[in-house]
Length: 631
Image 1 (cartoon, one colour):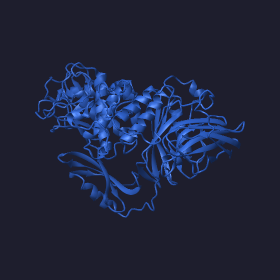
Image 2 (cartoon, one colour):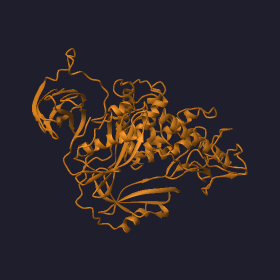
Image 3 (cartoon, one colour):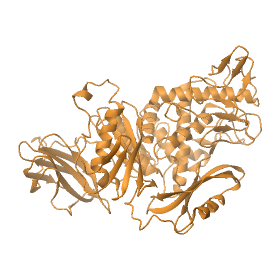
Image 4 (cartoon, helix red, strand yellow):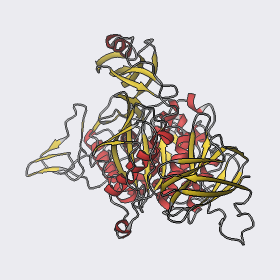
């Protein structure tokens, strides 16, 4: 798999320097002799980065809706499961940050690019990047979004590319809203002054005040001076509302009382330790933030609540005041918001994104609870069941969200549903994927088997590593299918098909051009009656570094079914074959064959639509013949 030059002046600004899109780069796939000899864990980070950079160089304009004055900067290369990597990039336009322009490229353990995600829906077209609204006016607008304002950041000029691109001021206000803490990020239209979008970084939740008895926690100190700071897990500490960790003359903590704050910190420290260890052992993530660091915690919040605010986790008490909210599922839930925020795309988005953020917290709560296997709190898919927060039992039921009044199935009303309730469909999908329909009934009456909790956690986490800003259920479907293909390959489609079936089972519909796992028919096998590549024949001339579109640049219409393509070119030439689909505004690659020869084959399970073939000359030139079948 190799690069192709791309017309245009898009510039990818990478951490190693400037790389112009249009300049041939290294192979997309680093599965060379060097990679083949790599450890079983997979390719190195450097190999994954080179493969992703090359893919971006080649496909930046067509695949990611790049404008002529867009640039890309690599910001992370996150290790996934099974030796995979997910390389994240941010975009600028005319030097301005593009909110919603982020993208992620998936690379499997062999160094092959297996998929991509992008948060941007349209190519940016702005007449000017000069604001008509002043920074001071934007700051005043931001302040009005909360009450009891404590701090407002200096607005910065950005391009908001969620839907049609608009010039905007972005700022953040800290204060209180509806009587609770708030850190509101606000985008103000730099032309009109109206609020375009906003989201609250404070993610609130609730959990149990259950005490775990005699446990081991990480603390620091010696002699007659100790503190609740975990020396083995960077950033993990716990104290009361002044932010300082609890200290003591010995290394024995807590009384066992449900209202004692030091005891609450014992529960928190234990829960965070189990979550950090689970992330490392099961998912390959280094700490809550993914860079080896974690969030400090505070207890004693005078509220029937717990929350994450972007820099700390904070835990209050149950409605009857009898228990601190510091059990595994709520502690891991709040830190789950930190995982959501520190994976590509962050936490920005509307109610639907907020609901998925809440479900992410619940999922990491369930994973941590299962990993800890503590007999005081057996693993389940209930959230906050032991706290009995307001005298009504669990606050959410992941296996059956409707049991507490939340939706089990996705519908058009989810984007306007309150975020905790909007967690229902994703929570339901996760349990179906993990356990199957014997544990959790489906929305469509289907029957499916589960792949197990730990494997479901891998698929979801690797999907998070493909997250882009403004994440929706449709985006998550594509991301987790891409993750499944990256993790398991396409030789055995069992796990991939179960991921897909679970999305179908919660009524999240298929997305045009989503990943598929279908070995399909073999165009070269004469015993396969459906694999002829003979229905249509097209001829053309290939030139190194250029594309030939067949049967024309306008493409052809296809019904739902398998599209087959067989390319045969001159000896000694290296040609690549791509199937592209028209999405209403641009051509998007949906399948590719990129060997080092002049013969390529594609079998693609297509939805009805408009397609075309792209025959690209990597090296050499000459006449070619393309045979293809259209459903």
